[in-house]
Length: 109
Image (cartoon, rainbow, N blue to C red; front, side, top):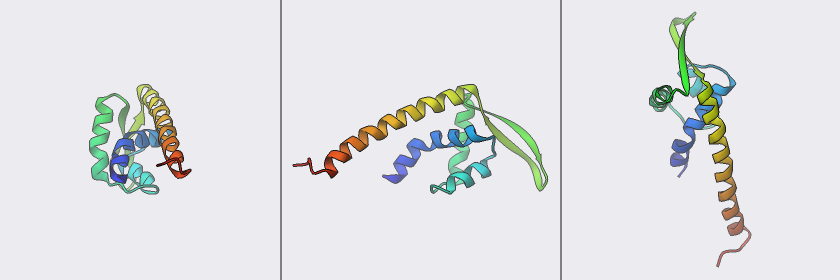
């Protein structure tokens, strides 16, 4: 179940990371890995999809330790999508907590 929930919310989590600051894939994965199991292999296809949807754009910055890094930045459309997703998430959590609350309070048969 946790894997399915992660898949359903990963897009929102990546947008939330980028709402804080522009970032490159390794850095995004590192930040997310502080709270969840995630790998770069999972993020790359998502980043291509977010770029195709025009929710992120990219630019390159020289790296002092190697090749230039591809940074992702949230677009206006990406910020709007994040706001919508957060609203949907909050509503979903309320619905689930309502059901679980009834179960936990003994309202089951």
